[in-house]
Image (cartoon, rainbow, N blue to C red; front, side, top):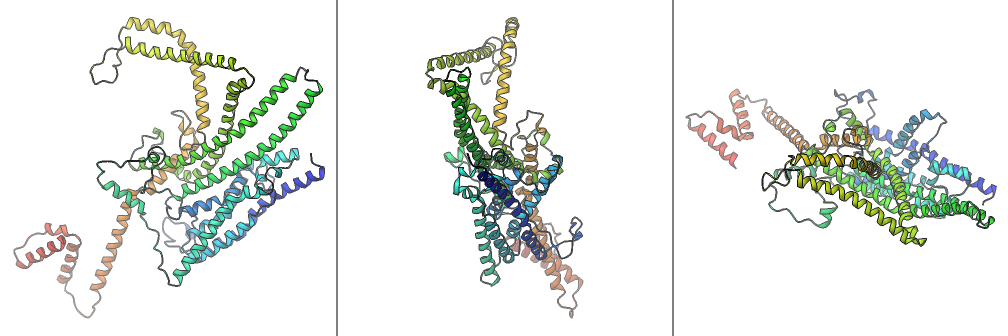
Length: 637
């Protein structure tokens, strides 16, 4: 055990680590707001006083900066995703409720967390604003500088991110035991390397932006075109719909058939990429924090086991509590081993969920694009518009929280299952009770087999004796028409009392299956764990559905292509009209007759719409026939 001075020194370091994280969060708002003001002054605000724009309430010199288009951003996706990953440490700081700048009552804790979320958003706002700003040269310099400041500011104190977990801090304060002994000098690297890696990537990204924008500014490269209204993958999706399907489908590999098939006509929005990257990093940090707590609990249990052994030794192993103490020691050893072993399958399950959610997002979006809503519950075919808009903001945060809590719950359930397996199969073999274990296992398997056999026998008897024959040879099953009614009524009467007892085990089986599936799928926000008719009670599933419908209405390739055609056609007609009238009004000194003007407009109309030539009233004049023939030739060419 440590001396009092050493304990005090470690507790002071604990407080210093927590204060360091919170102070850095507060002071980072100063450069963040400075960058936001600069970009706001540079932002060009068009259509400021339109009917549906309320930004005119702001000062005329300030523009509204959009950090990220959460709906229709498909370019620069991984840069936005890495920017989300750079927020992982502060997100975990909020998740552990370590943000407490003021002493407030418990009922107002939600307001503090809201303020903390806004503060974290402002702290990382320059990353997204500089990536999305149209002033590439200035934004690249500001983004590079801010990333460099954050990377140096993230250099942790020796106590590290582990101290941001309130539960761990509570344990350390109660027991006055150091945690740094678990990781030693590598603790800072273990906790901070994901965020530092993301910040390093952003440094390189902003440096690349600076070099490219500087070359454009100097005239060495052409300036990039504006963001297209219709993305390339959306246009390819529409083209694929208009093509005839191939007569023979391409042979797929095992990976494409069983795991994932890449689709060049579909891209995930930046919101989904950022959510996945941030969820991966937060899950990694959560596992590390959980392992730190386990290491501490394990050491405390070892001390407790030593005290139990001392008690048994003092009683010469003849005390009445000696067998109970041995069983408790065995339970602690088994639990510790199973907990460590189940870390890998629990984490692997949550990682697979993240990839599976992306696959389900693509599958659900394609079904909605095709007009298929049958995979959704009937109540969600027309969700509320306001709830759907809010769902876009909720989904990303809720998905990360569901993954973290889901990992912890899955880990606990897998540990309980592992302990049950150890006590039912492994420990009897270790204690030389293999025959008893095999006998009990055989009796249990035989009992379950007989019960299942009787249930299958009932189905077979019903199909053989109590159903009328098939009406046709092509029928797959017999019609639902009773036969041998007297025998059937006796059959139902005598099995009535047996099925009462069988229903007890069936009810327990239903409860056990629901608990296992519910805990196993708790991290899956794309699938409800509620029964049919109670899906609206699942707030996570409602957020998923609302998010799907917002993306469906705003990124449907067919709808976007149609709007693109309308906008392009309107621009072309406006340009042609401006050129036409500008050409006619260029010679003010010469008088143009009304007939010539009319015939010129007629010529332009027929050239733009060749099909109208066939609908013109025919005239016997030779000049008119030649004029019509010329237009037909031009239209064919």
